[in-house]
Figure (cartoon, rainbow, N blue to C red):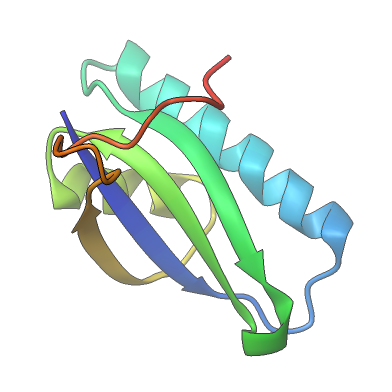
Amino acid sequence: MQGYLVETYTAGVDPRQQASWERFARSAAEDLTTRGTDVRFIRAFHVPEDEISFFVFDAPSRRDAALAAEHAGLEPLRVVAVTDGSGTAKPRDRERT
């Protein structure tokens, strides 16, 4: 599977909302997986100064990563493939539960 970075606009969001979005992202990925599309939420990065957040998903396609974000209540501005620097296309999954 490929890793995808989903960029979202998050102006005026407090840390509690950020934690909620991470739970929603994880739940959305799990829901899509039970429906037959293998998607995993890896982690999120929040940049309050720039009013932006990034959510990393492993997914079969860019569209599936965007679908997981939308299912979580996020509004993807951009979805791009990412690598983890080890020469593989998949981010390291340190946050998986």
